[in-house]
Length: 199
Picture 1 (cartoon, rainbow, N blue to C red):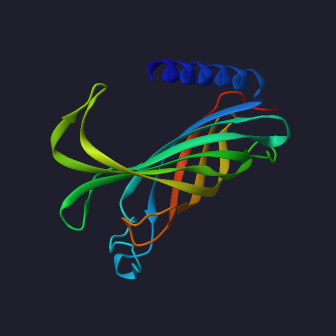
Picture 2: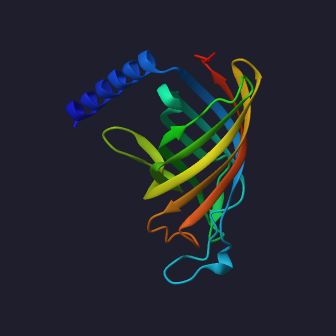
């Protein structure tokens, strides 16, 4: 297991180095927003009467843009505070995705970004005790689900390297029976920094 983890980590470092060497633009951003989803009362079939929506969500994202305005992007968003599942169980959803990115630049001020990719939803259910394994100790158990993602943002550069961007995302979550629906949307605004601005 350790050998696999070391190989994966080394591979990621190599990919990061290659992407950095060939990217025309590299960006990192931090944002805040909220998630909307169907209400608990709209649950049907095997879905639980619990909405995924509500609360403030924080997020981090980063991307590499190559030739022809195409690149790769990754992001993670998590509920800033715990919520109560069915009125008694503390939990926190985390949404993450890896995307193909299209980000054409219109002049020096405006740059839309269009995203499509895959990722996962991790629902952390918190316990009043800590469990330890060989690798770590935690006070939660996680339920994980595969998801498909589409999204977009409109970057507005305040200065050549700093932008603000309103953003919107749609998640299509496989087997999301813990909540009232298989889909959710995230809306927010982010502030970002471009490390290698294009002319």
